[in-house]
Amino acid sequence: MQTNLQPKLHVAIIMDGNGRWAEARGLPRPAGHEAGADSVRAVVRAAVEHQVTALSLYAFSTYNWRRPPAEVAGLMGLLRHFLMIEVPWLRDFGVRISVLGRRDRLPLGLARAIGHAERSTRDGRRLHLRIAIDYSARDAILAAAADHLTAEALAERLATEDVDLMIRTGGDQRLSDFLLWESAYAEFYFTEVKWPDFGPDEFAAALADYRSRTRSFGGVRPSPAGLTSAGNSPSA
Ligand code: FPP
Figure 1: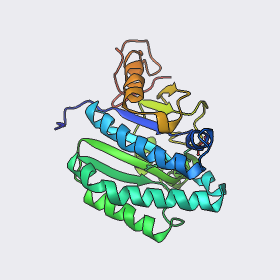
Figure 2: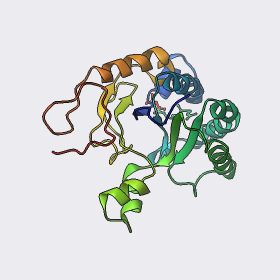
Figure 3: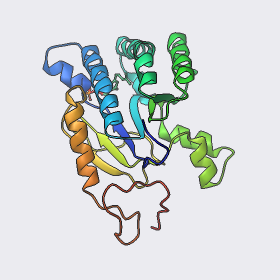
Figure 4: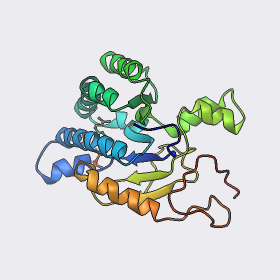
């Protein structure tokens, strides 16, 4: 079991490549998302095993509403199913679930599943799993900035924390409006591997790569690899 002394480590993942994974196999795109949900299960377990303290997954952006209605409906159903089915073992594993993003445009069943998952896992202390659904970092920053002007208050309103390691699968190298504020001093790890093929071994490789880096947070390079951004003030 984690103690409160465990160093913080926040990993964020842009899970890209589901559609191409499915198309390469002659399958419909939703099959790629279903395979992607298997990767989510495996990577959450791996994150707990590797003492990651926070894991943020980009599941659906505000721009994803532009996708074909059937694909959107499939994704919403998959997310609802995941939240309903996986909660018992996640709770037993000490995982706390939070969902980032707008709730008002989600199907009622999904909004209810989110509420249930958040309530029943709120005592989880090993890993804080944040799932971003109908999420835009710019919208989140705008909403937080509306009446909170200090950096500390704004960070609190964003309901997340500084990202240490940002992973993107699927070959592209961009942030796509995910955790912009929180990634100010994140290390980036890009891989060609498509999300449904990204499992515990790939996750361990990304963490090993991260731990081999030196993080200076804008200062002179003093820190050994693996030091997290928690408690460090960027100086440049
Ligand atoms: C991007 O791949 C992926 C998404 C838009 C959806 C991510 C959702 C999952 C992995 C499903 C399950 C998630 C959870 C949290 C249970 P893409 O479709 O844009 O791939 P492409 O670039 O190959 O078309």
